[in-house]
Amino acid sequence: MSFKERVFEKARQNVRTIVLPEGDERRTILAAQQLAAEGIARPVLIGDPSSIADAAGKAGASLTGVGIVDPADSPKREEYAGVLYELRKAKGMSEEEAGRLIADPMYFGVMMVRQGDGDGLVSGAVHTTGDMLRPALKIIKTRPGIKVVSSSLLMDFQDKEIGHDGLMVFSDCVVIPCPSDEELAHIAISAADTARTLCGIEDPKVALLSFSTKGSAEHELVSKVRSAVRIARSLDPALALDGELQLDAAIVPEVAALKAGGSPVAGKANVLIFPDLQSGNIGYKIAQRMGHAQAYAVLQGLARPCNDLSRGCSVGDIVMTAALTALQAAGSIKQP
Ligand code: ACO
Image (cartoon, rainbow, N blue to C red; front, top):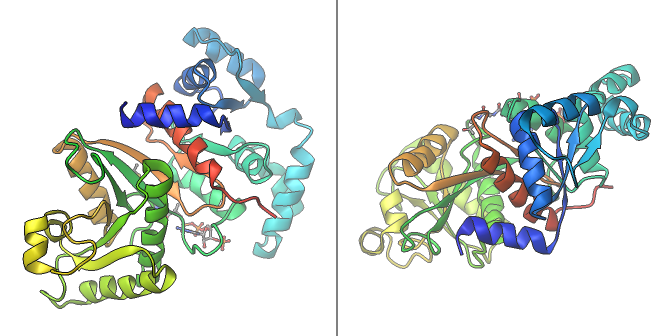
């Protein structure tokens, strides 16, 4: 069974409600149809029911088993606006602004997830990463003990000798441009959790990457990675985590033996933590385009799962992201 099939199978065993705020978008509607028909999730499209029905008609999609919620006449609108106001008033939001923002499908959808009326959210076929992330950061916030929201790319290699049966987790490749040492440590802890929850890697081996291995170079960038390793170890002393390591020392046993003997991670890392967004984003795209890996992006560190799509996404990408969101929901936090 492929990784994708395993994810779908697991999602079917514990069907979750997935909110899709871009409700009248063609690919989103086709994905909702597939999610419902194949029992992978209970999809809920947000938007004006007549626009959604119109778009579904044009796409030739059936809406059987697909929920539709219209923020404009939802009985929850007032309650959600009140919660939004309470959450943001200290930051200067007025009741009027909260009432206006909650009519936006993205804010409404994120609030549904916060309030437990949905288990997770997927968007990004039309909106940018920031359009979805900002409401999620403001309304759902981070999991207890985790300071930042970041991302992991689940890399599924054809060569099953790589990583854990062909799977590796790369992080952060989407969210935090220049993480501090503390943020890098939190990214590492979150990525290990993602490896367990979504990839079935029960004993993640986490390498914090650099252009130096164990003191082979000295630079402030290297010192930051070393400091992140110390912080991450204090956050989770039981986790197999090491750094700073060059990529080859992290994944090639022969290089590890030469450069990082005795490391519990070097030579067998299955979770790679990149020092910044440029290296992370470039790194995953090299593995995807030149290493022919399938790459699936998820956000991590939110108290309840919200995930972002690329605007060039296919229907299949939306279905897979919804299934991964459903798996993340199993370990999510109930909001106070
Ligand atoms: N984790 C937790 N909280 C955060 C984070 C984070 N990573 N970033 C911002 N916040 C908080 C802020 O503290 C603030 O909280 P407050 O309002 O309660 O005080 C709130 O979220 C909103 O912050 P803003 O300042 O409005 O947001 P910011 O301008 O920092 O933008 C964003 C955040 C959107 C995540 C930004 O970091 C970003 O654009 N990152 C890059 C995303 C991107 O373009 N990636 C490209 C790759 S996409 C791809 O390859 C698929």
